[in-house]
Amino acid sequence: MKRASSSPPTDPSPTGPSPEPEVLILRRHDLEAIIAQARAEYPNEACGLLGGREGRVERVYPTRNVLNSPVRYRVAEEDLLAALLDMEARGWGPDPLGIYHSHPHGPETPSATDVAESFYPDSIYLIISHVAREKPVVRAFRIVGGQVREITVQIAPA
Image (spheres, rainbow, N blue to C red):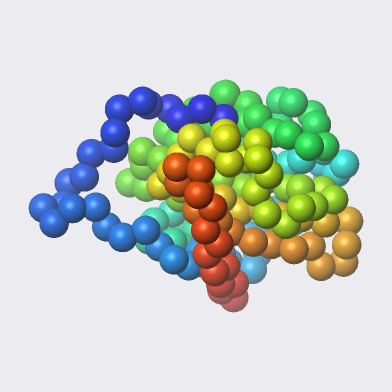
């Protein structure tokens, strides 16, 4: 997936950019929908976008993996554009709060390809791994300049 714009994001606040959220807040039904998508697309990787602000997911945008691969994903361009336009219209843009994909059999961390292709440094990367298990592993990361840092995933009831 490539960044929609190569120009740096503008910051309307006079004090500089808001701090990156250290917690991703995801409602239980949204997490269940993401896991259901990952299982439906198994053994291939599933992917999608997360819309919202300040670390709180307000909407999940399931997308198609045009690579149809168990080890890589690429979001369909028309799905990416539709999701980004919707996020922008809701005041959540220009970049997604997060990008999710599955690692059907692991690992539970970003792969070297995930790190190399992390074109959205302000976004959180959510990975759902071991999707065939009763309880898949769900972890979130920031990937900036090739550096990976795990952040907390908080599951909200609604």
